[in-house]
Structure formats: structure tokens, C-alpha cells
Length: 410
Image 1 (cartoon, rainbow, N blue to C red):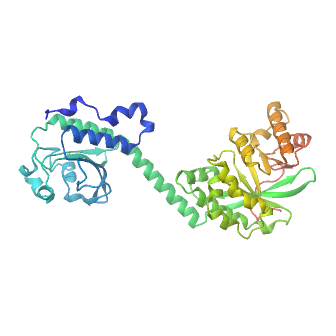
Image 2: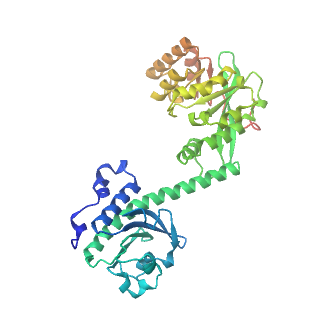
Image 3: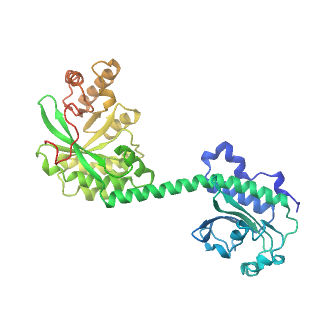
């Protein structure tokens, strides 16, 4: 064995870090680094540990064989570990023969495992806090290990610290978001407002769109709450809770008025959606799928919607004209309602390009039997242009603001 084998070799994970780091996970990169250390130093086990609530938790382990006593996810008391003693200075980072070190011999694992040679360096974050350690050990002493090997290990530990700091930040953010959403759901820190949808030809309300308003901190727009829920896998749960709350408003509207509910494809495919809709008059409901939502399997989505649509439920594609996805939704899902995005309606009386695209969608709807609803109408000039374009239904601040049941006139 050469005295400084790591000096001439870069771990495979490090070689990829600059070129394709986006495609390689932190676990994969650290796994490559551990394997390189263990192999080149001829050690039996290499691992990354995390210090957590008084325990040493093994986060990454690379053993020479399957009989390794160290397992990913395993833990032991921090005070009974080499790791803690290396961090606080009671043990050196490099030990060629643990049986010759009096402090190491106070640890039962030294003779029970046994531990022969041992290298360990702290993994620190940018604020100086200790995450854990980057370690390797062999069952037999190894007097060929040198200070240069320890310096190389420190370089790897510094690199690991940068990767793990991002991972820990993401994990903590995830935990904070999950906790915040649990509070929102358990304490019902949201309310429903309803925006009227008008027949602008007959001058009457034909439906209402249910919109969510959150009373929880931080104060921000509803779309950010739903986006955050999606990031932590809680979108379906939040949407179902909101839809259940919104449905309670249906009985307050005239029997010939419908209720539009915003929903993601994931929630449509959720098995719980059938339970939520059970018992409600489907012929008075419209499910709105936003343009911004991606649909992985249009066939499955159409099949899920089919029995509900046969029972009278209608499907709307929201935000049409805002992007390419809306056209795919329209073609693949054949909606009953196409909602023209507010960005298309804004200044439609003066913007020839917006007017041309809106006119094309209106003609498409006429030929396919879909109904058009124009969103975001804010001026009389916009409303008049929509009438000229043969749009029958519209909503927007000019016609009616979103209001809670107690404060609105329906």
C-alpha cells in the first residue's frame, strides 16, 4: 500500500460535481466519495454520520462486505463514539492503531468490534456548526496511514459539508412547510369566497367560482399556498379540504346556478375525490383545471372524469390563452367550458393580437360545442368588445368581486 494513495486520485463523485451535479443526488456523490476513500486506503468501512439529539446517526455507509456492523439509519449514543471524541479533541483524527491509544481503549467498541485504524474529521456548515463526521476505519491496525491522508479527508469533509448543508436546509424547509400546512388544515385557517359569473347577454348570474383565501401566516396569495403544498406532497389534501368547504356554499345559490371548483389533475385522480363529490348534484358543478397544471396521462384522467361527466358534471380548462398547455388540455380533454385567461382579456378592446387569439378560441369553442367564459373583465370597453366577439359569459371585478357568503349578494 502506498503511503498517500488519495493524493493522486479524485473520488468519482467529485469528478461529476461540476459537470452533472444537477443530475446526481447528494447521496450518490457522497457514496462515491466514501467508496473511493475506503478502497484507496484499504479500510473496511467508510461512513458519514450526523449528530442528532445526543446520538450519532449513520447517514451514508460504504462497507467492504455485507457483514458490516454499521447500517444506514442506525445510531448509538454520541458520547460513546469515536466521532464525538474527535470533534472535541479527546481523540486525534488519525489513529493507526487504536489499541495503543488510552482514550480509544475507554470505548468498548475498540475491542468489541474491533477498531484497528481510524480516520475521522468533522463535517462543518458555513456557520461553523458541526453536522457530524466523515470517517473510515479498519479492523486491523494500519501504520502506513499518513497525515496527508487526513488532510485529503478534510477536503472531502468540507465538500460534503457544502452538499449536506443544502440538503439539511431543504429538509428543514420541508418540515416547516409541512407543519404550517398541518396547522392550516387542522385549524381551518382558510375561507371561501365566491365570484359571480355573468351571462352578459341576459344580464344575470349563471354561476359562481369558489376561490380560497388564507388567514394563516405568512400573508401571501393563494397560488403560493397551493404551490407550496404541491412541493411537499400535500396538494391533494389541501385541495380536497378546500373543495369540501366550497361545496357547502352551493345551497345558498339559486338552483339554476352552478359552482366552479378549481382542481389539479392529481386531485381528480385521487381516490378521495369520488367520496367528496358523493351526494352533490353533479349537474351543478364545474371542475376547473388550470392551464399551469401538467397532465401526465390524459387517457387516465379522461376515464376518471367520464362517469362524473355522464352524470352531468362539467369540465373547464382555466387560463386558456396563457400558455401552450391550455391548448393540449382543450384538445385532449374536450372540456365543456373554456375560460379565457385574464391576460388575454386585459385591453382586448385595444390589443389586436389578444383580440385575434380570443376570437380564434371563441370560434373553436363554437365549432366544438364548448362554452366560453372570459375572466378578468375590468372595464366597460373590454366588456363591450367581448359582446361584439359573441362571448356570452364573463367574470371580473367590473361585474362582481369575490365575496364570502355572509357579505356578498347572490
